[in-house]
Image 1 (cartoon, helix red, strand yellow):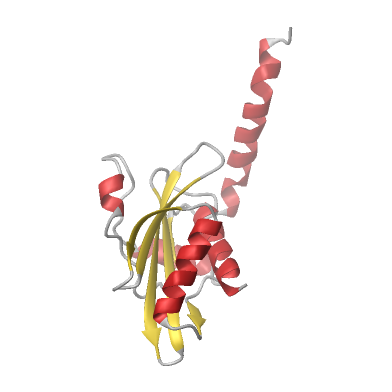
Image 2: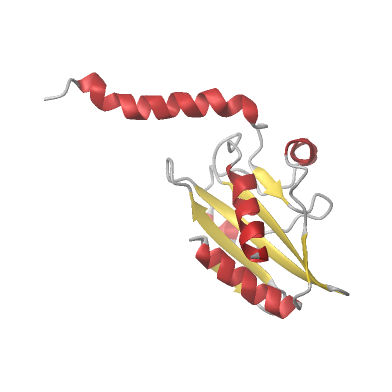
Length: 166
C-alpha cells in the first residue's frame, strides 16, 4: 500500500505548476477579438450562477489584453456571413464546445467549453458581420470563475481562429 503523501503528489505538483505560471499571464478572465466593440451574450446570463464573474466589459481588462495578446484580431474571411455562420458552428463542434444558443438570422452563436483541469465552464460568444469582402468573425471567451484564466481564453480563441482558417 502506498503512503498517503504519494497519492497527493500528482495533484500537488499540478497545483504548483499552475501557480508558478501565473506570472506569465495578466489577471484577466475576459478575452475578445474586438477590443472596440466586443461581442455580447444573449443566452449565457441564464446559465451562469450568482457567484459567476460579471459579463460587463471592463476597460482595464481590454487594455491588459491588448498588451498580452496583440495577435488576437477579428477574422476577415471571403465567406458570406451565412457561410461563415455555418463554418463557425462546425468549428465550435469540432473543438468540443457545447453550442447552447444560435441565431442564424443575426449570425450569433454562444457555446460553453469545459476546461480539462478542474472542469471550469467558460462561455463563448461568436459574432459574424457581413462586410464588403465577405464577413468578419469575432469571438469573446469569458471564464465563469477566477480572477485570471492562465491564458485559457486566449488559447481557446486562437484555436478557433486557426481551425476556422483551415
